[in-house]
Image (cartoon, rainbow, N blue to C red; front, side, top):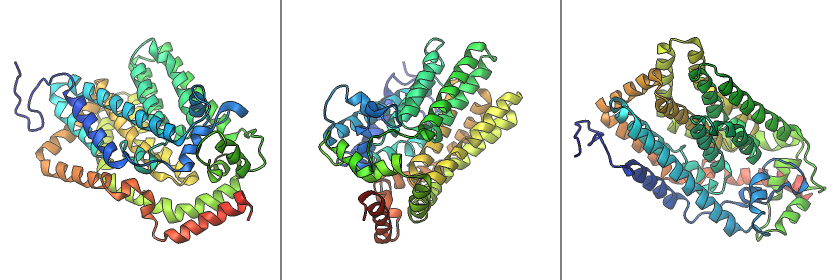
Length: 421
């Protein structure tokens, strides 16, 4: 028999298993069909799949090495199929985890958890950025591995695999340190606190941190030993193993460009024309979420009675700052800021799952506020979704006012350094 509840957001106290998961997966599938079903990534994105460990242990070569175990030629069609399957698996993983979280939450906070889930799904920075122009980005594996590691974190035996998952994440791309690393590292530290500073939890935390830092330093500063004089020759070699032309500009920027040339000739000019306006728009659309998260962490810091727990919540507040070095050294601010926002959701959801009362109190107050101001919640959901289902989400270059000037700037840079004229 179903027990009724008068809460406006919850019609029943007990939902049959699978209800929440189906709804969430259907929404993510709708986003996929709307934003990515007929779109493919560009050659810059696809080129990353062609890199292997053929010439040594190099950055961004893990995924390609795995694919080449099963085929001698990586085609654009194969990459697209892999990207579709990867996103759908991630959507399924997210749906299962959030559905389980809602179902196992205390009844008094269940409606608040549902509201936070709605805010996540409506956020243009949840997983929407993996669609459209980023359909084939390697970022999807970062999120999957991070969530898998957090599942393992609650299991005494499986948690020893987390350092391996950390190694995989950084090996996919060292950019993991500026994206989803903070959420995983903070929650590893939180488990040290929850387990009363046990040797095992400390060991998992230390091993994971050492693994990530060591690999990051290696990939970031070790000089690649590719046997090619220039990016054009490198691209020609990779193109012979596929049905599309590998991107020489991507290879030059990612592996061969001297720091000064890369930073002053490419990053800074493109930041002004593209990344800065892009960042302002994303910051604007995520502003309601920023207010919500700041309130939750403020309440958590206020109510925490242990200094170490306060320190953990301080790290939660400071976690988005990891975006700053990425903003200085890269142009694709949408990917890095999306990770900063997603980390906040990951942290809040994990604390709820862990029954951390000080966080749950803050989450509950947010939920109660929106229940009393349901129109405001609806307006926020519409506001953020208006970004998701728009050209802005599928064409990030729409932020550029003078596309022709920017295109000429980029072409001039690469023609001189890659093509030699």
